[in-house]
Length: 320
Image 1: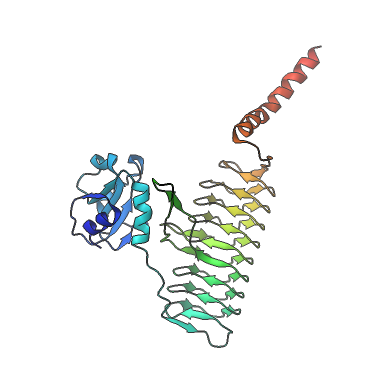
Image 2: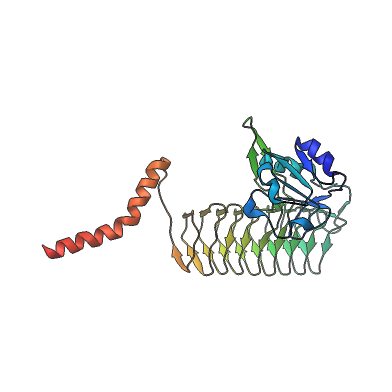
């Protein structure tokens, strides 16, 4: 679409060359036909002029000279609408039934390595690549663009590359969904249990590195990166854009909120909630009963002071 046409569709304004053709949202590499979303001054990349166009809030327009720009005060809503405007839906037209397997359908554009075994009712969409010695269980769906390495096991009912949970509220308090253009990349020697969901990234990829093992019923959200040889137990949920270090051991029913980073060699106890970065190796536990947020903050503050209080009381007692 032409930049001017996109601006009209989004109800936004534009400056620069309105005739430039935009074909995609920007990923890691700049392209003269892609558009990049910049939400604030601090997010402006040095090479912003290498992109075909920019979508941004109107108040940072002056910081982006000599660029083709779509700008609006409702930039988050405009970005959400833009992701849907430029989305490429799988056509579903090039599927073929996989010979020798019951009810398995694979897109013609998918590349499959050697010694790959499929269960029943498997669906693999367009432009997927699968390495050697891969076992794919019953009722598995692998969405378009996913990349799977060698010696990987994906158990029954698991979904790879599903749509991420990204949404913004518009001025009428209605949810606008952000369509996810990234993919899922799975390394070598990875094991994924049954009924797991691994969402594709918003613009970048969700990455499961080499040697990771994942139990049943685990959810890994968009843009998450799981470090090498990490183990994740059942019913764990990892929210969007987390970066989990190498050799982490994450217990069952752990919840990790979005944008959390952990270092290498971390152990997280079962049922813990992780709501801040873990910056040093070790074993961590975070279990608190739910309460009103203001009450929780007050309790949490006192808990952090308990050790100092105990030391003070012991010191006073020793002087009596």
